Image: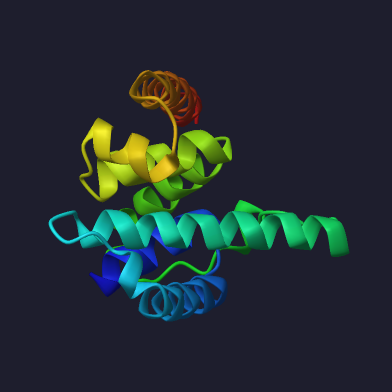
Length: 158
């Protein structure tokens, strides 16, 4: 579960270092609050909720202290698992487009499409109605399709 939780932390923060710290903080909080975990429920959903809460708390505190927010896409530290240049370019473009989505859409896309949570589970993790999850995903798909069309048009013009 740790790699999945780290990916979620990375999708929230956009930084490998921040994701490491957020993962560690999430694990510590989960151990501290283990008595609050309800037997028979999903541990991954519970820890993803903790991770998101910690991230939101950190953003609020940072805004109060410094006014900083999410890191820009250009500052992402992406791993290079595939030696294929074309695949790396494509993967970077996909990540860039997803990271360019508004935070609410980005985290919803990540939970449903990357982590495979159901709409209901994502709504519980994000503490929003299931209809809002569906709306965010539909809007994100439209926006990503639009970005993809624009990229295709640019490539054809070259």
